[in-house]
Length: 443
Image (cartoon, rainbow, N blue to C red; front, top):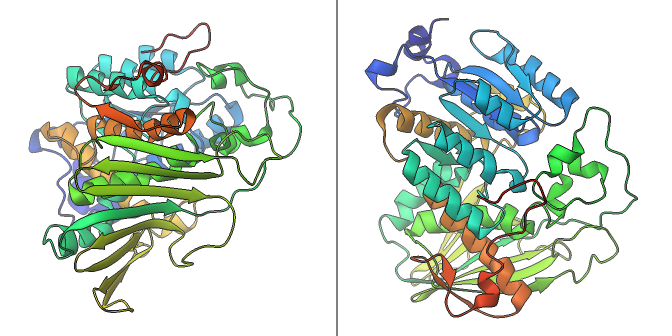
């Protein structure tokens, strides 16, 4: 099907969309796209993009050759041209050889910054997963690269584009129905046990040297190749950087918040102490604003405080309590004990039944990713700011990273967003940039 026919026909659920994808002069231009990181969420993001636009996936990059080849087969079956993308094991070769309009970066967190900055310097638009950087200095470098490039950027913080949360924003925040909000509790209570076992050799076709990249070299455990890297602080920022950044960014978006003025955190490995994982199983963070505290809690053990809300937020307003999650929302007015209004996630499975067939698709997230992708394409086409450009992703990501620094130091950090530094705290500022492994240069 020709590109213009695709757009007119509304293939894969585009019909009736209120979001224009392209300006008229771009309607016949095929955007060339590449994916760096073709694992679980890389394919989730890429295939949601292919559901909403007839882009040409020109290239894929991954350090695990069997996974890369499988992703190429799946991509060819889904894109309009039916062509297999070119395959790369090193993202630097991909960016040097492929003329691109857009690159999706779905690597582990420690690999977000370098390809993002390199792509932006070439004028390529970027989709990058959250948190955008593994340290605060990376976030700053990425935000500066985005500003200098002028290319469209979007961060995979898709709560901003999730249908039932957009409804919540209109009902309660745009209207001010909650009254003064002085505290927001954000949380994740999903259980994660000890990571047990001995290190092994990487599987055949897995380039562990390249996978490690700028991170410190550590023994290989099989779960690292399949998303389990999130259990190691060497490659990310623990549950706060993985799950917390979603809820913190959602709160900022709903309430129109910028940088917190201060960050205080405490936590550690209190219960799951036998395994090789290095992330804290318990953590509390207070993001302080004028007249408002946003308080994060995660715990990998114990009983859920509210079985209906294992991961979400509670907005405490003068006029009532609003509970929000990726699956539902409930509003309990002041003086009442039961919800007066409720809503649920919109899955869009009638329009996109393939979502049910794909491996490990988070069905609750798919509608938000599609809308976030449409919004990015509009940004590319019309030169407009997206709903979550890298500059916004940098605030949410760096704030969570500051929470981990506060936990490490055991004190409150007073943040100065103008200088990207902690006021009067040389020890904290020394932790804003991680040390890169020899052979890699911090941006």
